Length: 371
Image (cartoon, rainbow, N blue to C red; front, side, top):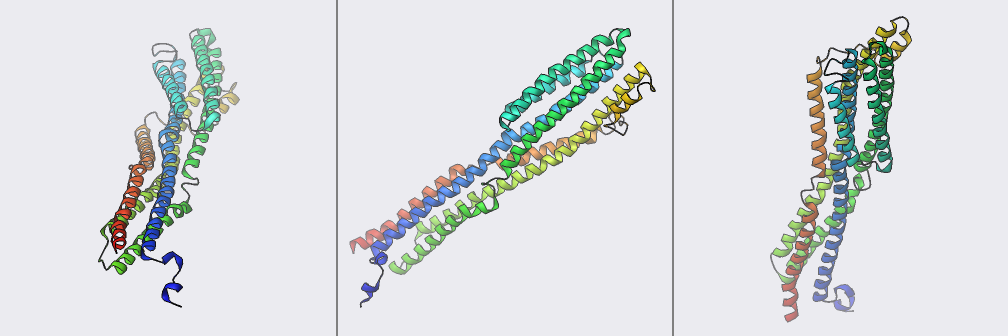
């Protein structure tokens, strides 16, 4: 039996081998583009939602809580002093209530928690209207010296309703955090997803190297420049596809950054809440005496067992920590969403590889055809 008879059909002639090798390279290039682009866009899409919706909604929910706490503190302080700051609950109360409404609007605009989040926002907005109404009642009663006790009662009702609003805001933020968890931990960001885009890229690189070796051996050429450039382009595709790993890592850092923000915000909220609670308890004692209302004042102070710190004593350091935590969280989210135009460069590189493969094989096919 001759050597030609023993040769497998798929390598029966040099021209057929060249055509089939070229076909394999083009086919694997197409598969590589499909897998790399799919994973890249999957990670980038989640990162975009996290940066543009989830993180802003989470920060806005913290800001809304902070504004509501400060508004209540301003109302308790000013009404307790007889509304001396331009009358009523005061300018600071009005400013903080307006800010809380704006932050709730931001949460609604960036809500990533679906219909459940939308319903929570609508409920909170309705309760906020009721809360401002109770503060208005307290103001009207404090204006009459004989109705001070009723004014304090209205403030107590407002304080109780505010606590309900803050709990609902925390629940709403929890839903936004669950959405962020889904964006940071899903099919596209899973560690094993690297196999989906890495294996086709490695296969394409190996095929290019083998094609280079075959052409060198068969046609006695030192190097096929187009195929060499195509191999370099594969390395470029690998680097671009690898950016999805960086984005996934930044998404994890974003999720961890929320915990840092929570710590800095919680300290401030407790401080402001403590000052408001102790101020309201003092107003209750003025109206009915310490002994007569001891259970009521104890209940008001119970969420904050430690007396409030001196106003402004820790404000500067708290504000600095809050700003630093917010900036770090936002920067991590923005870094995760920065695709570096990989969604454009990946198809371009794949087309370049396909063109170089065609360019690299065409002279050899033409040369062999003439023979």
